[in-house]
Image (tube, rainbow, N blue to C red):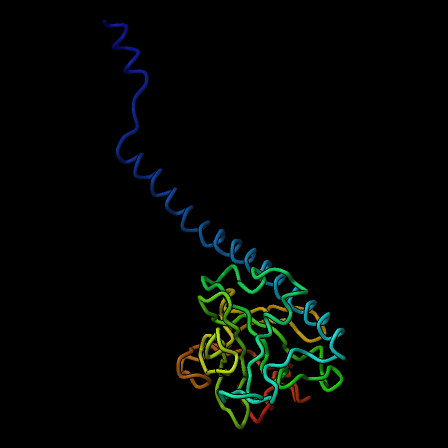
Length: 253
């Protein structure tokens, strides 16, 4: 019995203080490493989103080759309102390029919970914009992250502010089952500028994709519902050949 007691005495347990110290160290390491892991995960999601936008750009280029070098229209007349009768019929760009993609997953950003979260630049659509009429294809956004819709067949488009429309605007199909219902304004189509760690992915007319830093807008000057706005520097959002802070008469950025 004495020998057994001696053996037990030779293996003392941790004291409460020692356990607390170990727990504190683990907590500190977790606090340091968890944000790193979160950033790494988001970078992976952003890379997957970039690949999706690249596929959209390639599909649009293939569409343009088959249709006299013109991009997808958004209506026959170029108008965006609901008319109820032709030619004010909406053209869902995501359906028009679907034969070249054969997947609906590319329209969903991994960082978004929405089924549809990729948007098309509305000024590029009208009734079919010719590629030759886009003065700065390397600086003109064509696709971008948007806030999106839970409806997988919804079609989203975005409009960046101009002097005539001084707000960040979005468009979606007014009725996904009725193309004659036209387009309606909705923040679901607005650019999700801050999605990827305060940045968004943008696919350009020439086919390249870039992650760009968003601009904080706590005063909600660009959109009354959004505290972030897309970058303007060196971008021709309106496809009119004007880039930078002066684009469309705007001065922010």
